[in-house]
Every structure is written in structure tokens, then in C-alpha cells.
Length: 297
Image 1 (cartoon, rainbow, N blue to C red):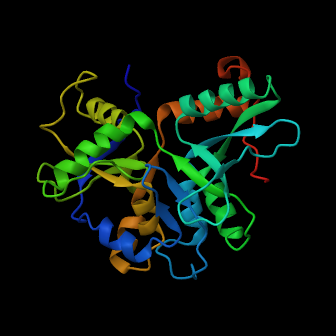
Image 2: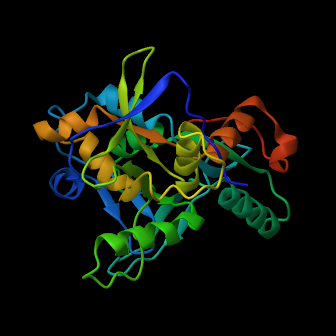
């Protein structure tokens, strides 16, 4: 059954003339974000000045705070479980903290870790993307600090690859690199579709971590049955989390207009799992302890 994120009746969908120029902006403003060939994203701190970003630092963190990221921690001392990565060209192994956007992935890792350690005292904790981003910036100049490697929701990569290939028919694209985010366009494919909250008057361009959530939201708005073919009502575009964060950090005035509209929509499963962890619902988490503990390597 597809996940659903409801669209309230008080909201309306409208069109905006903002063009899709994220690629150019992100190349100029990406800062410390590096997409790896394996489809993961490493968030490395940038030593550059953040004083002229499109959003204030607090506003940027607020946009990232809604996204839960899951990792395995040692229950005894609350330290994160890291892995040693030996990348090409590295003189020594690098400590990596894996961050998972899919609850199923982190649960599988927890089970594997417990099996390898005779059960062991480990649990899953949810951290916000904002917390990890802040930690990365703070520890950018610390050689021994682990890098954070983000793993996408695996079943979203085929759809992301299909959209990327369709948008680049002249390129031989074999894999999708990065954390995919899905956004709706108008029928002409030139403008993003935005959500207007009639109560607050605020407008947003929602970027979804799961394409099923985007489709379910539109199906509800258009009053169509779940699973309906919405291809005649909207087009989809795929971007990466790195590109979006690049826009949010941009010094470009036009990018700043877009940055003020961007809204990240985590998957329904990730949101509910984070709530369960916070509430201590360990029965539904296979024994995982609750808590959205702070990163303390």
C-alpha cells in the first residue's frame, strides 16, 4: 500500500514561474556536499563563510530539521556505531557514520550488528538532518571526526533514474547518484507547482523523499482514487538533496527566491518511525530503544 501524506482542504495548488535552474546554482553553491558514485551523500562541513546565504543559518536548519535520519548507537554510552571506509586514494581508512533515510535499512543493520556481537546492547536513534548538518560544520576541521554518509531510500532509485534519463536523453546514465527528491511540475514542464496554505498565506514547493507520497498527495487533492494515473495532470522532476541544500545555501538572489519556497517532505514511514522512537514504542521497533539522541562520537 502506497504511503500517503494528506493535502488539507485549506490548501490549494498553484503555479509559479520559477524555472528549474537548480543544477547551475548547486554547482556554484554546493559547498561541502559531495555526491558519491554509490548513490549516497556525504555531508562535509564547509569552511567558507555562510553570512550571505539565501536563508539565515537558523532558517536553513529549520528546513532541514523536519527530516529524520536514523543510525545505530551503543546503548551503554550513547556513542554512534561507525564503520571504516577505505576509499580510492586514501592513505588510511576513514571513519564513517552511516545515516539511513529508510527505517527498513537501519532495522536491517541493527539486526546484523546484534548478530555479529552476540546480541549486544545497541539501539536505533533518530537524528534530524539539521543536527547532523550542524555537527558536520562544527567538526569540519577535526581530522578524526567521522564523516557522515547518507543512504537513500533504495526503492526510490529506479524511479529517480528513469526520470533522470528522460530528462537527459542524449546521455548514457547508468545510475542515479545522490539522495533523490521528487517535485511536481506543470504540464509544460517549465514551472514548479506550489502549495499555498490559505490559513497562513504561506507558499511552498514541496520536495518529496518518496515519489509515492507525492502521487498520493496529488491524488487526494484531485479527488482521484489512490493509485490513479496522474500523468495527465502533472509532470515530475527529480533532484538531489545535495542540489537542494546548495540552493538553500546560495548567495544568488534568484536562488534565494526559490530557497524561501522549498519545503522538504520526509517519507511517511520515516516520520512515523521517528515518532515511535521518541515515544518509546519499542514493541513496534523490534526492541530498539527510544530516543532522538544528540550525536556524540
